[in-house]
Length: 223
Image (cartoon, rainbow, N blue to C red; front, top):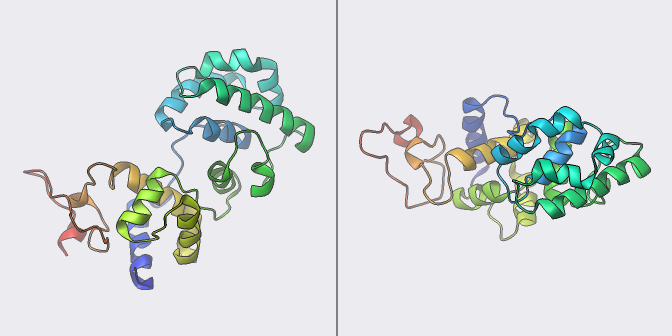
C-alpha cells in the first residue's frame, strides 16, 4: 500500500472504534500478564470465563504462589494446555517476586525472560499496561496484514517489523487493537466479510466476498 492508503486504512478503522481495548478481562498489570499468557491457543472469551473467579482471589504474584499450581489448575482446566500454562504462571510469579519485587517489568527483554512469555505476550503487556506503541502480531493481525497488503511478511516478526515501519505515528498506540478486532470480526479467516469492511476498496484481496442476499454493503466498499 502507498503511504496515503495506509493512513486512510487506519483512519477508517479508528472512526469505527475510537478507543479500542483488549477483550481480555484484567485487574492490573500482573493479572493482564497472566491473562495474556493463558490466551495462547485459547479464545479471550474462554480465558475470561476461567479467570473470572481467579482474579477475585488472585491479583498479585504472592497470592498466586499461595494459591499454588494445583489450585490454579482448578480455575483454568477449561483452557487448552492448562497444565503447562499453570506451571509457567507459578514460575513467573516466583520470578517476579525474586527478581522484580513483585512488579511486572516494563521492557520486552525483561518480560521475555519470564516463564512462558514470548514476544507477542510481551508486546501486549507493554501496549495495554504501560502504553507503549508496540504491535503484537497474533494470527488475526498476521492474516489481515498479509491479506490486505498492509504489511505482508512470511513470519510474525517480519509482519511486526513492517507494521512498525508503515504505521503512521498518529495510530501506533492503538494499531494492535484495531487490527486484531478487524481480523476477529470482519476480516475473518475462512470467509472475510468484505461487504461490510470499511477498508475493502483499499484492500489487495481480490476475491471479495459478496454480501449475503438482503444485506446492505458498507458505503466504503461501494465508493
